Length: 150
Image (tube, rainbow, N blue to C red; front, side, top):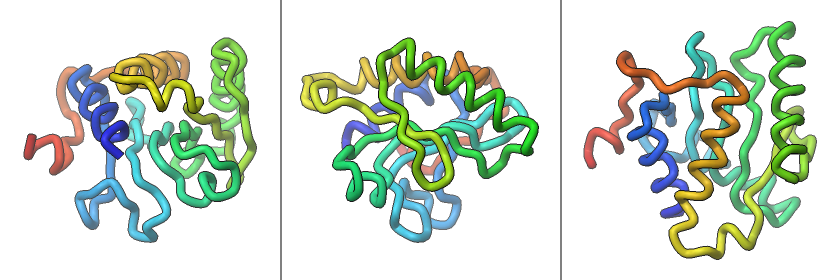
């Protein structure tokens, strides 16, 4: 779980807009099925999730995932973003799994097991952000309670 926190912290420090569960101020959502965070685009849409999606982990034995989130997107926005997500996965030789109505890839075990893996994972997620047009903000960021406490 330190990986998720360290990646979140690094992306926050790089200026990305991070969103967590507003109810608890923690990484877990209200159902307890996720441990992670979302990256927000300039339209204030939740676009990319990184973390542990418990149901996905149980089914595929892949604890850390990167998920294209469709929840805040209009129908006409989904296909272009999905195409970009697929392209990024192909370029990085990452498997795409269609799960829960969306596109999911995962962090490979050999990367999870590396020392200081959060740097490599952060860089990978930043490449997804750039490819999906999620750019760092210089101001007007969502400041999570955990970031503010650190």
